[in-house]
Image 1 (tube, one colour):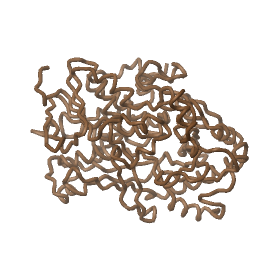
Image 2: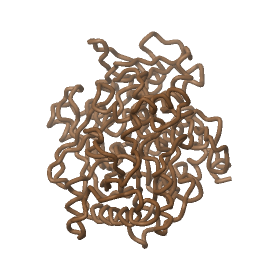
Image 3: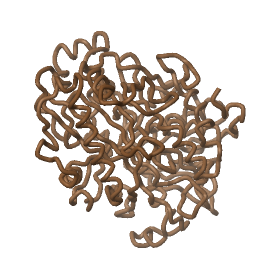
Length: 538
């Protein structure tokens, strides 16, 4: 269709994992004009490309730099939440782990939404379509897709020790967490291409930038969705010190993530009426669920000193840089969290509720301080979370960060499972080759033995794995925000496409599932339905 410079068919807000994928897929049709708005800037910095440098982008201008409200369950601590504020979003600053979650997660989504197109059998073709797996194609994996997935090129020697020790402790070996079964121990595959990060911007956006029907604006902060007669008609945004308007003939799609998407809905007058009035926003559409139901994966780090050997602390050396710049190998190609384990805190659970990230480096206080000694970390992560939080406005001013209440440990079951997880990490560390590598336990420490002492240690040291979801939850009940087609309830022409729509947290890292949601959204916007013949595991 013909359009003026500020008129498009689809306006996409947020060039993160979902926004990059969606904009690229939509513009494969040359008749669809798409505007992609990104509040941040370029991702063209070395710290983004070098995998092991990921935390060096945190707390910079390429990070939204969020901090939660003080958490009563953590003794009043507020936790830092890095969120990518650059092209690629959080896929440009994450640990690159390619994990989809358990098949049961998606079958639960289908059950909760009443829509079989969210079942594992139906979403598996989307995962395969987006994937270019270095191991090749099989019934679970694809090749030729935009998202490059590889094995780590230079895994640390302690990573092999982790796998062997966990096997010695009785856990099954698992070479593919995205294959027939999730449970067990193995090394993570990563979203890298030849030893460098491969973000959603690399995978999806860059190949699409030459298309005349795609406009990408950076430094563009969306301030509200424009509504007329119950329909979204465009987006207002600030750029270069001025306020601009972009009109959408077909749809406005929010891809800001679990913090920014509910924030923009609230700023637009879409959300719980009482809260909007409280902060001085006119109520346009009273939708109680906006910003509610927030979930995140909490972790408790267990850290050991080591007897000998070099941790990734020493990777940033002249030889480390020489190996990375030369052959894209060596310690700087590490994603830090190299090995993983999925298991259950109780034998009666049908699916894993614990995930481990094993790091051959001291990872402490969310990398606020650089590692000071050679050490080893087992991050014990709860992936089946019962606690819930919320995202709320602190001001009607779009420049203000929203109030994030993560709700950590508001449900006691979460704390019990994490304590069991710490005990299991200690068991693995005490056997096999890892026992020969590790020296004394630095945290929680050898004096912390009883479950009650471990409960307190968990409250004192708990951190975030940075996987916020569900603040614009998909469903058909009164507390849901979008329907199974990702359309905002009660507003025409407006969808949310990002991790905020997940009905529940997946058992695993959330980046790949977020891109899958964008792939599904691209089909929905293009009018392509799920082919029943595809919705089977061939």
